[in-house]
Image (cartoon, rainbow, N blue to C red; front, side, top):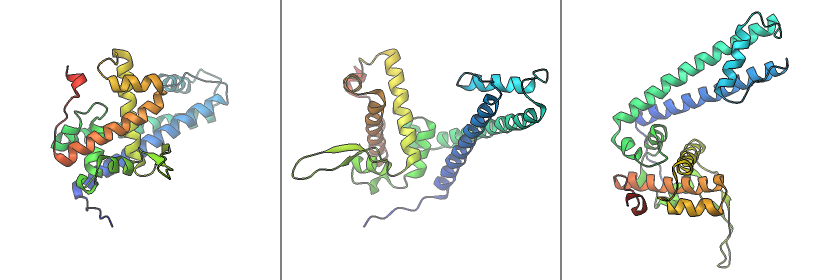
Length: 238
C-alpha cells in the first residue's frame, strides 16, 4: 500500500493558482471560438491566431460596417469585453506564478532543465509533495501518464501507446515543453542533441515529443528526489 504525503498550505495555494489560471484559459478559448463562430454566420472570417481575433473585434467595433446587425453587434461587443477581462486575469495569475517560482529554490533549479519553465516548475513543486514516494523515475513518469501501456506475456515485450493516466495538467505541460525544445532544435540545429536527432529521424514530431517529455520528467524527478542541479549531457557540454 502506498501513502501520499499531505501537501502544505503553500503547495495547495500554488495548485489553486494553476487551476484557476487553467480555468480562465479554457474560458478564453471558448469565448474566442464563440466570436469566430458567430461572425462566420455573417460570412466574416479571419486568420487563425491572436491577430485574427483582433481583426474580428475591429469589425465589431466599427458601427459603419453594416454586415453585422446591431443586435448581433451588441452580443459580440459583450463577448469582446469578456475576452479582454479574461486576458487581464490570466496575465495577473502569470505574474503570481512567477513570483511563487522566484520564492522557491526547488522551482528555480527545475527551471534550468530545457523544456521546463516557471509554470511547469511550480506545478511540479506544488503537485509532488514527496518525490521520494516514487521508487524510480519510471514510476514518476507512469504517475503522470507518459509511459507506454504494456501487454507483455511469455517473455515477449509488447508496448502500446502512452497510458494517459495520472495528472493530465502536468502531462500537457511536459508535452508542451518538449515541443518547444524540438522547435528550438529544428531552428538552431540538433547536432548537440544526438539522442533527439536520431529520434526525429525515425519518428514523427509528436511521437518524439512524448518520448522527450518522458525523458524530461525523469530528469525532473531525479533532481527533486536527490536535491541536485541540472547537469548538461556530455554531448551538450562539449
